[in-house]
Length: 427
Image 1 (cartoon, helix red, strand yellow):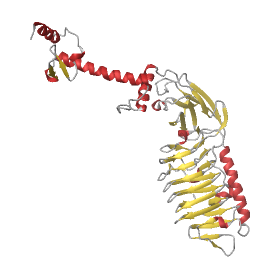
Image 2 (cartoon, one colour; image 1 turned 90 degrees about the vertical axis):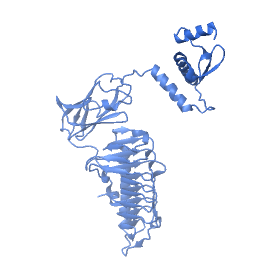
Image 3 (cartoon, helix red, strand yellow; image 1 turned 30 degrees about the vertical axis):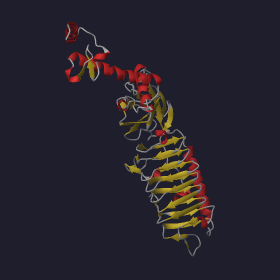
Image 4 (spheres, rainbow, N blue to C red; image 1 turned 180 degrees about the horizontal axis):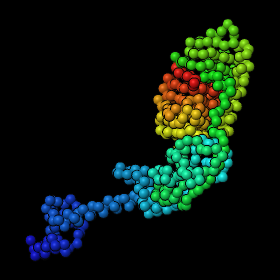
């Protein structure tokens, strides 16, 4: 080796010579271009190699970020990865510093005659960090005394449920404290305080079904079934006649006022049977339409657009819920509350329960106090082997697919279609 080569190697060993591109990689070349494997590299050469390789990775990521395109040809990145990477870089360099605010409350500030069983709601301007929405940050007081209760958080809304009914004709003060934070960790812009005064009665009364409440199924344009359906309760059609009740093998009673079927634990009524059946059905259908209008017209919803229409997987407490779209149940949903609690679901489009999924009741909740008001053009579709709970008030049709079951009432302003289903009217 020449004197120059010895001097160069000495410089490398003592860190006096900078790394050069020709000295890094899986193999390096010395001054005489003789290849040497990596295990014969000096420590300095190996460090240089690692730095150089990392520079290529950084350069590649910067290229992807700057161009906004995926390296699809080599299969390294997808468009989604690119966007996610760019988004993360943007968020890191532009952190969210906007403080959340309270947009609305229910009851409203200075509201009077509030139901004594009212839950208290506060809706925020953005999604909040769930762990900061607690009894410490959301309080309700009567004078200086705290009201005992439970705090939950759904969507962008905090909910305070008193442990017992509020006192009648009493002023209460609710407070959201600044320790409530959004997902970026920003505290509430300022403490939010509002007051309301109770009345003397409980709120959210059940929807009055009138004579429509005498039927497990009531429809204006027909009820049909295939397979081994079993209905516990009466069924009826009006203004269409008995020819629109198909698949039941009806046997007309000697009185001509009703018919029976092996598929119905109850009676079947139609508009062409002998009085008083036609008159009773006319009243029942009118009551069904009035009940639909009542349910659709309830105001001051406890939540709007919950889950953007997908409520599967949720546990929902009693209240009034409103959607401007359809509602999907793609995983089991639980309705939890007491035996006197009421749920009203206002749905502007269709209600769909996926196959094999269920509406589950807990805590003593009763199907007779659950009302699904559905305005959709298709109406209601309950998937194969799915399970439903409650009263459905459908402006259009109700369709139950094979093996689906239902504890409640099907009240449709068009037809009800069944396929080997079990329907039981609620107690």
